[in-house]
Image (cartoon, rainbow, N blue to C red; front, side, top):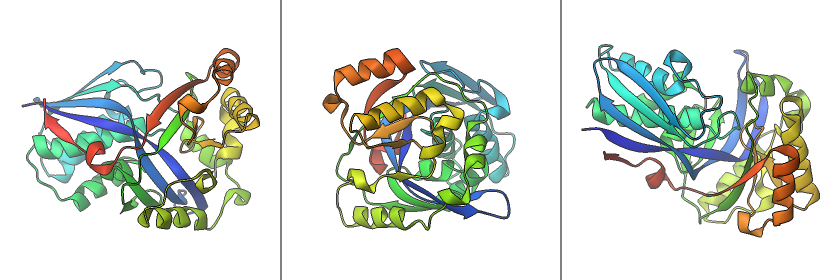
Length: 298
């Protein structure tokens, strides 16, 4: 029986980088939140691991084999279980724009790990899945958990936080394709961008206490480097700030977001962003843990 899941996008409400590690990765302290913009993942048994990618947002998405994180997650899970012969047909229906910092590929991988653990009847515990997830990509462990979480290390340490009151956001994305974006954004960081993680930890404590997210909670170490990889998006972001919106990068960017609902943003501003910079606005809401990780038989 096929299994169907959603693979939700995420925003980093707070993303601080505390320094570079000896292994070349960077230490982060982040509060991440899944949102209701999501890909659809359908899994079924097969003799080998097969991948099919469809949907509205294919630009920049690896369409086959080991370049795709969902495929890599399936291979890694079979290896973790010691059953390399296992096969699955993976169908991804893409709705999350790739390369914008929203974690779409990582979320597809996390959904595959959850779904194949059930489909293949492996019954691996969460800590085993997290170990596999960390080997696939830095955002995959968080997206395996879903909801809100305090994320540390290079992303492999995830401390789930209580679901907060529904949070309405607006994403700003474009069809710009940035080659090797994540590596370039991390390479652009300098010691001036490093901080102690205090703001992210304060936000995490606020969520534990049931307090709402406010604009002054938002912070992102990558904000000042967006122009180095995607000048049109950086200019659009500046126009939003000039209009009074508090906007910050999604993950390592270059997409960005605000906690202002789309309905409250002037239409004249939205038209300017689209016409002048090719940037479109997408309404979204926070997505709690149960909804973000649900699966059902298709």
